[in-house]
Image 1 (cartoon, rainbow, N blue to C red):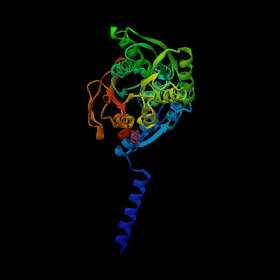
Image 2 (tube, helix red, strand yellow; image 1 turned 60 degrees about the horizontal axis):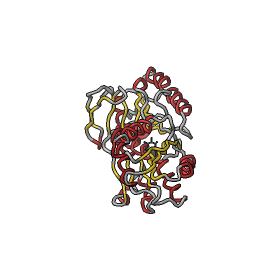
Image 3 (cartoon, rainbow, N blue to C red; image 1 turned 30 degrees about the vertical axis):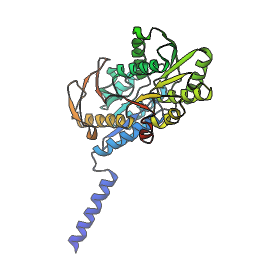
Image 4 (cartoon, rainbow, N blue to C red; image 1 turned 180 degrees about the horizontal axis):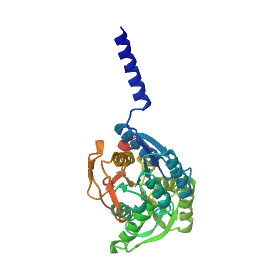
Length: 335
Ligand code: RAM
């Protein structure tokens, strides 16, 4: 009887320890995004949480209320004080976070960027959503087809300091140099800062400043849905065409009403999953972030760390998808 009781007590104690995480391997992974309240990053968080659960790690998700560098620095300082084991950051600026991220790394924290890169000096590796050149060029090709290769276009971006948008825009400008776009003109680049109201107002401003505007490219999920709403509200459906990078959940309405025929994106849940997975493997010491290392990222399979365009290293999630009326219903409830 005593033995049975002892065994029972042990079972209860072990269960309690496991439930409370005392014996879990339990690295703490902090995911820091450009700002909270953006459904794109909420989808990344779902993936991050999933990867952490699979690896037995703890997941913290944070971002400033608005997409500022200062807000991100403050959160990184808090992560250092909390002694998290890894930080995955989608950066609001390529260089400005480097000093605080270096401080984090000096205290033993594994730092990676994902989605929007930081300078390689401030990270071990970058988790890249899709080939930047392809993302940039696809959007130019799409808008060109929509407007018949003729007329003024504009870009409605996120914040002027954001690495990912700036890189994609560089490739858009390069693509536009091709003689097949000779009758198209990039009239303006404006910034909605990944804030809904500001993006909407910037789109409305474009209609006023460029009455002959034929198309908008918005390489941000916040911007492209705000632009679609602006096109709709201004009665410009069919007159001003739109493409960009959007969430099917936010764009379904605008594909259906004709404000946006087609747009692009990768799977943000998978992006968050891959970032948190890579962070977990860095904590375990399975990888270090060097070029040529290979690893398996759970349900996503095998990856190889490669050189990135900015002189550091990266892991590439995969090619972007195109969304339009033929497939929007399949995806609108997924992300
Ligand atoms: C917004 C953010 C994010 C970007 C997507 C496409 O949600 O700017 O960084 O990757 O758009």
